[in-house]
View 1 (cartoon, helix red, strand yellow):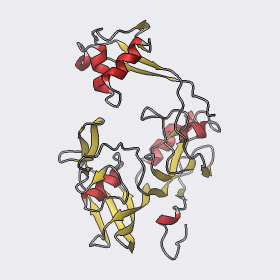
View 2 (cartoon, helix red, strand yellow; view 1 turned 180 degrees about the vertical axis):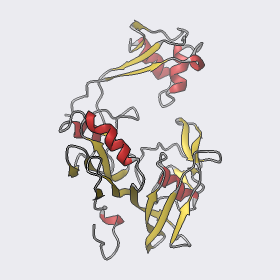
View 3 (cartoon, one colour; view 1 turned 90 degrees about the vertical axis):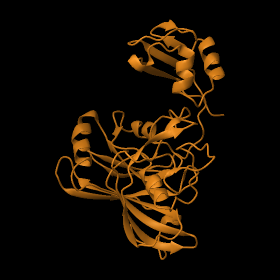
View 4 (cartoon, one colour; view 1 turned 30 degrees about the vertical axis):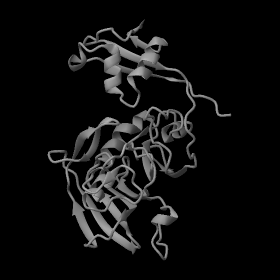
Length: 305
C-alpha cells in the first residue's frame, strides 16, 4: 500500500485587494476546485491559520496578514517515474520526462510524485529552468546547483536558444510550414477562475509549425516556440484550426471546448519536447540536446534522433 506524503503548508500574504474579505469566502474564491463546504470543513478541522493563530471562517482579512493552509498528508495519484539523464555536468542537467509525470508540485494532487522530487534525490539543490505540462514528455533543463542557476538561466534565455516539439494535431494544415502569432492571455474559466487561452490583447506569442507527415485525419508536426507562454502549442494549433488530437481542453479558436470542465493537467494528447539547443553557460559551446519521441510521434520510416 502506498504511503502518504508529508503534507504541505500553503502560504499566502494578504494584499490590499483581498483586505476585508472573510476567510471562508476568500479561500473558496481563490481555490475554486474545492467547494465552500470543503473549505469550511478544513477550517473547522484546524487546518487554516492566520499567522500562528487558528482561523475561523468569519474572520476578516487585513492586508499584511499571512494565511496558511496546513494540509495534512495525503496519498498522491500514481505516476510514471521512468526518467533518463540526457546530459549532466556541473553547469546543466537535462532530463527526459515521461508523459503523465508533473514537472513541479501543483494541482492540489502532486507533491512528491513530480520530476523535481526525482531529480532532487540526485541533486538536492536542482531547480528547473522551465516546465512541461503533465501530459507533455521530453527534455526538461535543470540547474544542478544553486550556483549554476543564474548562469544557466541567462544561457537558456539567450539569443539563439531553440525549443522544438513534436505533436499530432487534427486535420491537414494547408501550408507545409507556417507561423502562428495569436496573443495569449487569461480568460474566465469556471473550473479554475482563469485559464490561459488565445485572447486579443494578450501577451505576444509566436510558434513556427512544419508538417512532417500527413496521416488519416491528423498531421504529425514539428513546432518551434519563440515565446514560452503557458500551453502555447496547444493553444496556437487549436487557434489555427488544428487542435491536438485527444486534447480534452482546447478547441478550435484556441479557447476551451464548449461544455468542458477539463483541467490543463488532464491527459489525452501527444506532445513531446524533442530538441533543445543553447550555448553552454560556462564554455559558450553550442550544445544540442535531443530526446527520442514516443513511437506515435516518429515519422514513417522512423527518423533519426
